Image (tube, rainbow, N blue to C red; front, side):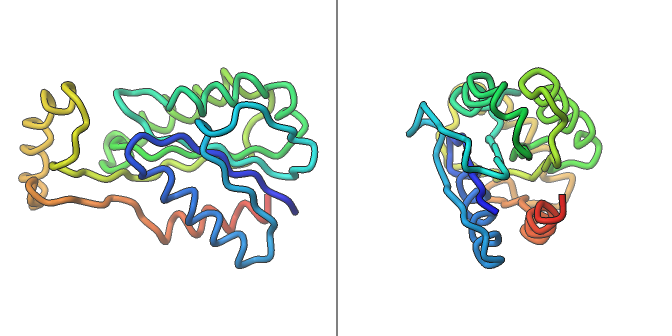
Length: 177
């Protein structure tokens, strides 16, 4: 099986997940091409059995280049097995996970894919209080800090909410889809 993993990232979180997915598949002798969506615009998808598309979420949106890949290749992706994943804060909290699934995965699949994806992955993100995430992050940071304190977490320290075991399990399930 030959697989394309293409991702969009702003701060590196989606890239790290895409790299982990790549490593897991390669351990299973899957031929994998890993591509940052901003680095390549034109694709020949004919040799791929599986296409995995992922993105980080910022301000409720996928990265532009990852969405453009889905939009531009919609017809060709209809002839491939496709899986999509996102990394976002909505996955960090149980009460917002269903909303994240619907908004960032189900709605995107309905708009940009002709066929239903073989799998969707909603993965936690990374909270880094020292990163420069822009003006909106600064505005909501106070609310995030309050929630973190309620959960017994230190809002002044970097928090990685990605569940690497769940990512591995999701990836291995792609081999059976």
